[in-house]
Length: 112
Length: 112
Image 1 (cartoon, each protein chain N blue to C red):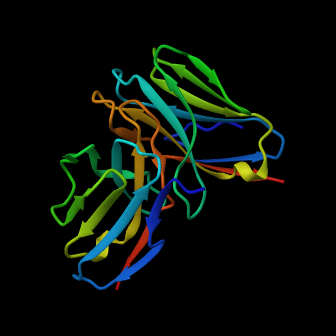
Image 2: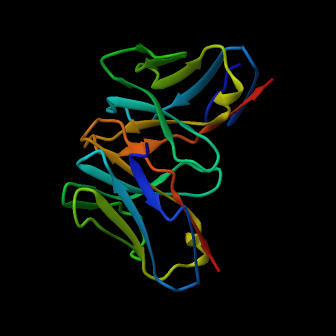
């Protein structure tokens, strides 16, 4: 049974058209993460929420934002997608610090 | 078969052989390490973790070794099977304990 669920699995959007990716979890974990992964590369952390506290990575573009309305859901908003934003976007959760992160199967984003 | 991680991102072994995947980490203050397996089109899957107060930990067919002196982590897979073919990532935590830094990844191919 999937515990970190990402929808949709594949998303196509147009250059410059806002897009939202969603993640939900059934683990009741405190921490939720968003990663970007490009082909043949390691996942790159964009930001994370520890409960309601938002933690942005220094090199995450302003174009990327996130919302966590409740414990179970977290959203990634890309305000004006560029061609370079085409990638796999992974959501992960963790119970707390120094605990394993559990990943969803990602949303593959394509930009036309 | 054995990989050098950052310098040899691919490892090819025969079914039934043991595999060793190596990883050099950068932060001497890291105290939590994880190995992930990522199959094509899926999110990273937790394999095994180890904390810095240990130098060895065993799971089912997998063993992780930690050498803090030389900042080296390895994953040993016994009796490698075709289903083990995937990219393997090591990851280390940061001082907050909430963020992971992923290594480059090693592509393991198991030949029947």
